[in-house]
Image 1: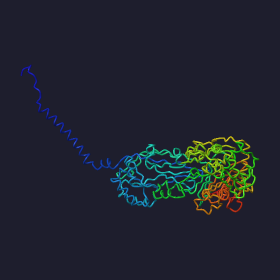
Image 2: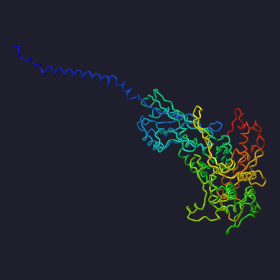
Image 3: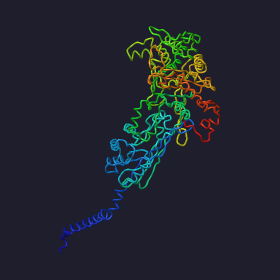
Image 4: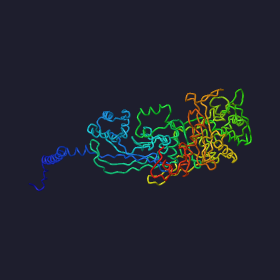
Length: 638
């Protein structure tokens, strides 16, 4: 071989063979590994990959409590069993829901609505089917567990209203978050409870708390295997109300068997001590999820138990409005304390005779006597001299004709008519004869019980109109105060001291004088001032008939507004009884007396005559009723 002869390359076949052998070896290893994974360890990996899953579950927060001024709970929470379905864990959601409908005795929500709700959320999130089921239902579902894949029992807090219907219109109720709420606030989830009415709604952001989260491992049936990690929820804040729970219970007891309203205000702060509307409803039904049958029964009830008459009921104030007319007359100089007008039982104006409630008339009366005896003829003539627009100006100064802005649902402003209102509403001028009706609280004039409580409260508190307060402060779950709601003066009426003095002296004699129309509100221990009112529903023309003989819906409403004690007022009260068929002095005044009596018996710590007891109660007897803080165990339950 020559030295300069070039070297021959290795055979291509050998290189190709080596490469092929390497590829075959690699594929053999891979195939072997695949065999081990797919065949040899198939069951083990299937268990890990298919049967075990990691889920992040949301933990609902406990809503804050609602307490009365003494710290007694009006709204609390209790544990409950809820039935849920996880759509991801059931092969046929519709069939599972239908089977649950057979197993659970209670009426379930509409199944189609549940299916629609499931489509609006992630499939791994539980769908609430029924809240607060009983133990028998829990046992049945546990027995049928294999037939109901994806169904689970969850435990969590449910809202409970500790005294049922007590203060139901003020407290309101909770219900599941609806689609509109979910769209508006993404922090809510299906099944969350949200305030729907009352304080539950207006203080929702304070009460709701902050949900937590829990990372869990579950099997193919959705059963929890273990908790991996957890962030606990933060409970909501508590509301401490100005409301006196015992006074509220007594007010509702006084309204039993009637339709009407009682409002009691602290004249010094504007705090609401009692806010009763009858009939009421039980908000616990809503917390559990009210059935369509029960809901239809509530809204179809002719007595309107869902209506909060204290702020939604609009009524002519009757003769209680004479307080406003009298104040306007004194301030405008239309009359003075010595101006006398003769009442012969009626007053001829135009071509019509306007009657006084007293057939024989009151004779010659001044402003003081006219208020004490509630003389219509006196106020017809005073109203005519004032004119409708001046009367309306003073009515609005007292807060009438506008919302009290108390923060409750669907508050009504009432109506204060004037010449501009009639021209705008009917395209007609105001007629002087219409002024006469408004001057005594009739005609187109409308007010609410809360508004009239503020009117008498303004007179009692020296001409100051206070904004109503329901919540004194908000506190955290540990008792730390996080927000205080201070008393707020809405307006100073700007009345002369002599005007206020004359009004208060006359209102005192309405109750304390033997001639007063409100003498049935008299208390032996405290001087009470007040004003009666009777609202005519059925126009009787010239005939004088007793409205008690009319059909119930045509009978008169009865009003009474009061404050006490006269010299240093603490409490202002408004009572409205629908279709009482008697005057305010006969029906509403005794109720106001009983409420005031109860208030002083419970706050002054000494013997007071409680109406209906038939005698003076000792401290020990008061304690047994729960009216004394020394009572060791007893509590007044209304």
